[in-house]
Structure formats: structure tokens, C-alpha cells
Image (cartoon, rainbow, N blue to C red):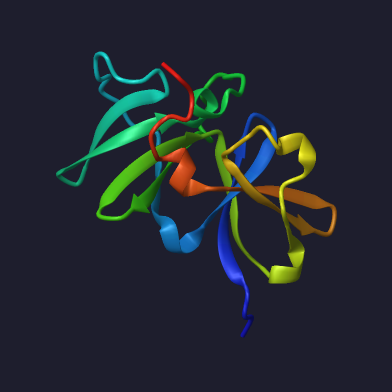
Length: 144
């Protein structure tokens, strides 16, 4: 059995990102999202997930990425943040994969101004940007 950590790999603006499986509650198809007036621009709204209200973030907006059209591949990745669950809209989920510590590098200097990138996982020819979920789901780092 591998001693590595498992990641959920997903697409966002033609780039592959990763979040730890142990922080991922579930992955669901896109559903109707109820907008919340006067919320931050990156908050898409809320959904009812089996009787629980779950806020949903638009990762494109949160991370300053260009937004494309949603497709049938679009998903909501529901992550756990302490006792709270938070949904994140992604362009598609690719796989669950395991990585070893020696495949993880610190973020390159070009990502230096991006507080949401915790590291880069190198797997053969692939690069996965590892998100810092505490910063992604925490309060906005941008002044409002």
C-alpha cells in the first residue's frame, strides 16, 4: 500500500488543480444555485444538499481566472471546512490519484502572487496545482 496522499484532480480554465481527498465530502453534478444578494462576487449562491444549506463558490472568480461556459462536465466539489461544507464550481473532475511527497514542489515563483496555490505535484508530464483550501474557502484576500 502506498504511503502517499490522495488528491481529487479537477479542471479549471484549462489547468489541472488538486485538493486533498480527506477534505472532500462529495462531488455532485451542477444543480440550481440560489443567488444570495449582497454576497461577495465569488459567492455563486447556496444549494440545498440533503436538507443542509451549502454555500457555493465560483472558483474562477475567487482566483481571478477567466470564466467559460458551464458544460455537462461541470461539477460542484463539496469540501469540508471544519464543521461547515462548502461547494466549489469546477469545469470537470478528472480523477482521484495518489502522490508521494517527492512529487510535491513548492509553488514556482510565477505563482508567488497567488495565495491560493500551496504547491505543485509533478506526475510524469502532468502538473497539478495544489490548492490551499484554507485560503480558498476563507475570507477574501482581496480588498472589497
